[in-house]
Image 1 (tube, helix red, strand yellow):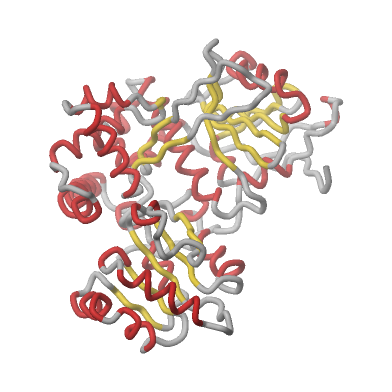
Image 2 (cartoon, rainbow, N blue to C red; image 1 turned 90 degrees about the vertical axis):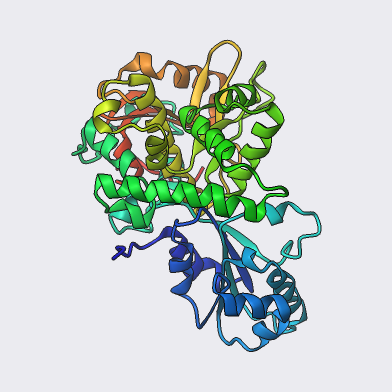
Length: 430
């Protein structure tokens, strides 16, 4: 039986979105828990993966909604896209503007790109990712991104900031690697290593043979799509190079690009865009690519904890992907709109993650080492000097146990800070 975890998206839906909007759309990878979470709020569930409801939705989408009462969850909407138009009409004709009427879930995002898609302006989109570590520990309210921006780093006196009084992390490097291979899919998380491998095999098979053809303009060849996915796994945490991906997969550049976009539509691959500012020049514009689940990436690379301990480069990539997939779900629930980017210029300066909120910047650098020092923070120090007052905080996340201050506005913190809140001085106003 799959363990039930409290999801941060559920907290967002209940506290903020259902009371304010008539229709919500939850999108994310198949198996991330969308249907389970949406069902917590349902009075009526229309499961379009079932033949009966699907046929009814195709033939009379308005009728099936009229016959449904309360909060209506429409599961796997892409099985009968006609339902989107019916939701639009129901929302547009509801003069009372009833809130919390519809929650739609789906494993694809492709239809949202169409300029005439009927959901535009009616459906509030929520991205659902796999399990975060805080959810696994049954905490769906802590947001590390908000915690970083709440740190009081505005003082110009470095001695005014005491070292963060975080509980020393009880995790070692191998513990992080075990969390990487366990992945983030709720169903697979508690399986044995061998059964998790079987589950990932079946997942990829369904993805390339069933899910992809459903949304692709033309049927992709499963072998080639899988090859592109495997290339993305090998290059997870690196800047996207479509030509290299094409060589890896043995396909043309056009095919590689088409398949990359298809994997994005299936929410299996994500791109972290490059950050730009008028104050810095000669910046790269290539996004970074990440597989949405580090356990799936490790599976596609046919590696395990023991093998990873002997490959420092691979560990670095997978730990960065682990951090990326830890941060992404929290972007949905931040108290203020926040963007996430990566940074690199042509002189070799690079920072793994840039969090931008209004005019403030938090830089995050990820190291797989258990021992870090000021030299490891050189790019954060450089960025701080370049940005001046815009630079709010820099954090060097690493696999060691102890938090410590590197410099004014710069801290080294265990990666577990992303789910165990540090006690750094906070500010109530700017």
